[in-house]
Image 1 (cartoon, rainbow over the protein chains, first blue to last red):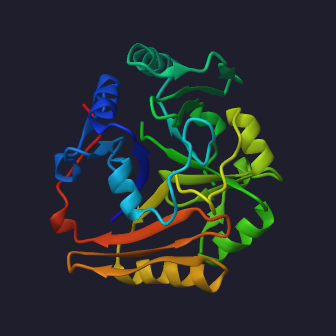
Image 2 (image 1 turned 90 degrees about the vertical axis):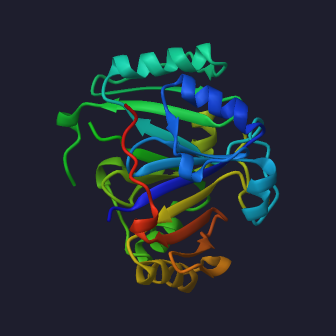
Image 3 (image 1 turned 135 degrees about the horizontal axis):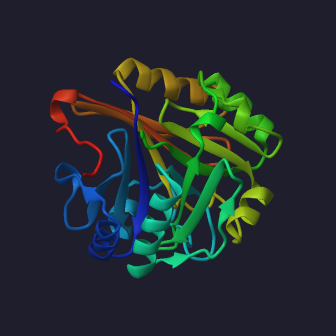
Length: 135
Length: 139
């Protein structure tokens, strides 16, 4: 069985976050989703668990940080094309995210990022497969 | 095209982090590793980018949180056996990590976790595949 990633992030209001990520085209795995926690399916090996502050604090060893004012981690996800990235960023902006106006385009690599309603930063990137050698 | 995930984490001392994660059995992709960043290979779809704190803050335009003081992400990896869970956590603790929680064994699900030298929380678990419903890429 391949290794699975579950990145656990705190959110203020799960219903709001659910609506946001559904507007981006994602869905939630109902087996691990309830009224205050949701399992966002990114791929068959990549998931993001969105937990409201109370359940998150129940697992976290320390108080939740200021996810708007500071940054402790961020997620980058690959996308199949530049167009796919522009499309998801447009959906994110329409759904209330703050889109970073800066676009990084180095030819073989293209990336853009947005900040969601909880302050979490999401980067989408495309890399030319020819430029990424298998290591 | 398969989606790849990169968990970007700030580190105080990339050399120390490299030694720590190599002790867990992981290796780094040299193509994306230099003196400011280390690309930790967890699987063929999962990576962690360890970025030195000033570079990390610059990249995202905000002060970098201290993971020893607050917790704003917990990274959970589900691996393919209970033995692998124990191997990773024991190696982490033997190499300067701290135990994050005690073993939780519910039969079909098993896990515990560690904090790395920067205070980042890693949970490592195993789940009986029979208890997981198949999920694919979004349509």
